[in-house]
Image 1 (cartoon, one colour):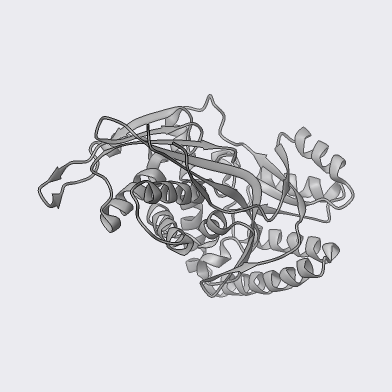
Image 2 (cartoon, helix red, strand yellow):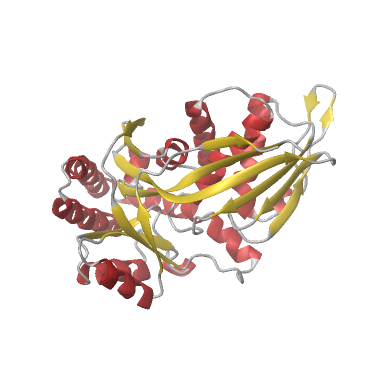
Length: 354
């Protein structure tokens, strides 16, 4: 009987504080009812065989082989530079686990399937890290708790991106709501929200591998560009970042009190700050304005944002109020992939499926 471990995690939306949280400001995020799953099973040939259905690119299969010489572990992978960069999160997860926990030494099949739109600010990279690490740790019998998985996944995401907030990996692991404050991740119990997510430019099946590879590491590039701008305009950016921190605190109070008018207004303000630091491309900006004009209580970019030169790939988060159908129709006409989502989705699930 083939041993098989399945780990699944939710997508996320950042309600408030994206980008600013990387520099110690508060951020509020929630899991939504879209999931990614990683299945790990044994195979006869030594090494890792990775099958990725649609994260972070389409139809990709490759072998990641490792060698051991006595007690000295050689370089785990060969010819990795020839493999698409889109596999960076999977590759780095395996490297990290081998180095920290000494896993490996047998044939492993890794298969990834996802309901999460790609490079859209919905946490696909963190979901890949958390689910891959959780499945491999369970498969190799590495003991630990949820916080250990979250820490491992955050380490991997940071290694790939250069800088990464703990928000995405916390949501993928714990689900529900989390508040990140002064680097500490706090789980919260808040009312469920009905929201709309509109994705622009998610990666199509027909996209070539090189372009998909670049898109898979979009977040890293955007984070780096924000850092450069912040260093150039330090005093201005410090004020913007402080404003974001205050907005997150007020938004938390608005959700607790079900004050959706105030919540929507704060979303609009937060969007303006994201535009100011340069992460709102034209098409996402237009989608926000169209949603607001169609009666939304609030609308903002969620996640990393986007870049015009990369097709404005990203997502907009909308608090619809009473204008759900009108807003969805408007977003679809604008070319967005539109999803109704609910907040507070359950976090990591790990199961043995023999």
